[in-house]
Length: 96
Ligand SMILES: O=C(O)CC1=CCC(=O)O1
Image (cartoon, rainbow, N blue to C red; front, side, top):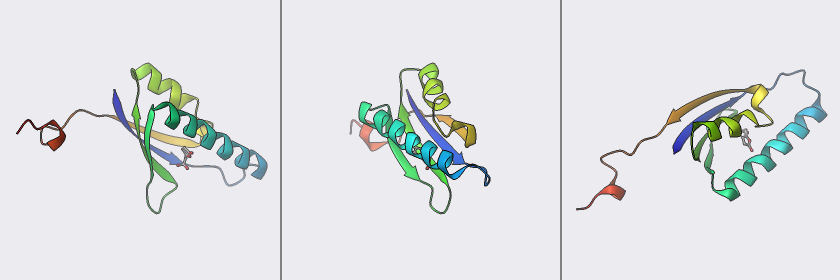
């Protein structure tokens, strides 16, 4: 199942710099592990924002929830999830 996930990162200004650096490093390692496994298909920076737009390919809603809930930055994020369906105009689906 494909999902588009928008993550807006809102780290408090008064968060300890070492905790912030450690959390961001753990976020990167966690994300890259899931990219290698194929569940985190794409990650794009939303230009001009501390946000990303990511595409996940996971077995079900529960697996997506597990992945998002365990993001090290999750406590500092606003997350929006959009389930994706095939578009009928997608030329990849065309039999013509
Ligand atoms: O910087 C971000 O957009 C938050 C984030 C998600 C995965 C990652 O490595 O950083």
